[in-house]
Amino acid sequence: MSTSPGGSPLRPQTNECRLAFDLSGVWLFRLGEDEGDWSGAVPVGVPGSWNDQVPGIRDEFGPAWYERRFELPPGVLPLGGRDAAIRFGSVCYSAEVWLNGQPLGGHVGGHLPFTLACSDALREGENVLVVRVDGRLGRDQVPPGLVLPANTHGRVFHPDVSYDFFPYAGIHRRVDLVVTPLGGIHDVLLVAAADEDGAVVSVTVEAGEGDVTLALDGEPISSPHRVGTSALWSPSSPRLHRLEVELRRGGELVDRYVLQTGIRTVSVAGDQLLLNGEPVQLRGFGRHEDFPVLGRGTVSALGARDLLLMQQTGANSFRTAHYPCDEETLDIADQLGLMVIAETPAVGLYFADDDTPRRQEQVQRSLAEMIARDRNRACVIAWSVANEPRMNHPAAAAALVELCDAARALDGTRPAGYATDLPEAEGVGASDVVFLNAYPGWYRDPGRLDAAGPALADALDRVYERYGKPVVITEFGADALPGSHADPPAMWTEEYQAELIESLLRVAAERTFVVGAHIWAFADFGTAQADHRPASVNFKGVFTRDRQPKLAARRLRELWQK
Ligand code: GCB
Image 1 (tube, rainbow, N blue to C red):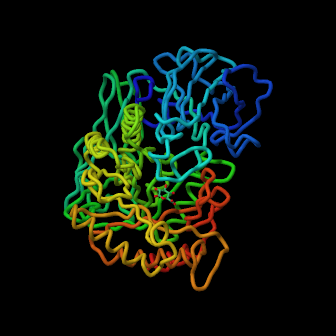
Image 2 (cartoon, rainbow, N blue to C red):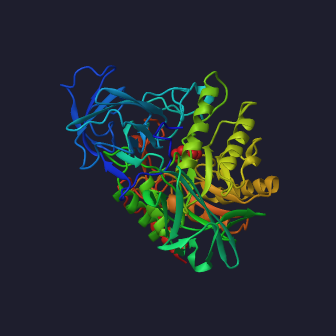
Image 3 (cartoon, rainbow, N blue to C red):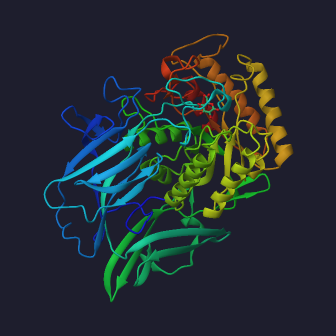
């Protein structure tokens, strides 16, 4: 896992004991193998990918150098009984970091936070933070790039990725200087067990020496603690609570951490998915983090727009395809009551080369980092350990079973599984809920709106017959070029997309074991170049890349709002 002062996975926050000082803003940027001279550097925005921000370097993946100069807020130095660290929300793909010339360490893998201790490097006056970011593709990476054709889904992209989104590089999320008390609160875990009268909440705190006290919404509590049904989190009542943890030594307050969270349970019973013991149906989308200019850089305005549009459309859930999403987006999901399937960055896995062991180790690390980050999230109701792994190798099934087992070992309170386009392959039974990706009427029987429904029905019934488990259709859909129309509907038009989605949703609704349907995708998104991706965009969005509705969005509103 990430290096940090004591390795705490807690998200930074500011209160009388802790400081999170946002270093986002304008940084200096240059491409180059070595740090060299900064005279040719240009200003760039962080968070943000560099590819669509700096003209002319779309297909450059580094190494690149970032620099940020900052002065400390008052009272940071001398640190005294405190530790300082720099926390990065996500750097794609790997990072090495220096503060005032001192190496702090690094991290491999995007979409997840890492924290590097920097107490000895901080100084009064100007501090110089330098980050080397390497976004070059590689077969030992997750997701893998430069994959030989035998190990891909048969599509050729430039740049050479085997997955269907642009491999944006850069500092993609917030960067914070974090100051925390030495021997303070290291981790907090809240687990709920629901029954007819509400839930029993157990809070586990890992902290240095001293007395730990808990308060829920301002009232002192001890663990375990009972709450009534009205306290539970659900899409119709996304109640959030404020859990305050305090650590005192000799009566003195040493540390305080506030966890804003919902209380709810998720389980699988027979062919149903239960939230707080009640069957629940997921309606929603797969969502990429993608926007013009920003690339994969996250801003909370976009997270808010997306999730509010989802809710307005009548959706109650989404999958963070194909990597863990930004923490602020999860804050918004918690507040709106949207249920989230959180996915690792493991898209395009295959098992046929010497790089496989290193790649799998990286998946395991990302899975552990994602669960450490998100396990207190009410909105996160399931883990997806991978998307569409290639299953044509004898080692594949065991590797997927191992990943699902690892997710359950790290967090026994949520179902785990992986999204598959090969539901008959060995290993699919390792999923608690079968996550099925299927493209009838598009990749299969293209242009055949009449054939799509029966094909999906057949696929679903076979999956259920084989596994007897609940099924979420994690992907289905069609590309629609915005403004493109045809009567009768034809592929790539808004009519075709809307008709296909409507007919497949009908097939899903006829089956009680289908506990969810997520349309691919929420919005159009940037891809690498390919003959099936006009203008390097995947047009399966129900909203355009700038978040305007296509016909399908309006149709969904009618269907889902009922
Ligand atoms: C899939 C992939 C997704 C693609 C989608 C498509 O099966 O999981 O990453 O974007 O198909 O549109 O081809």
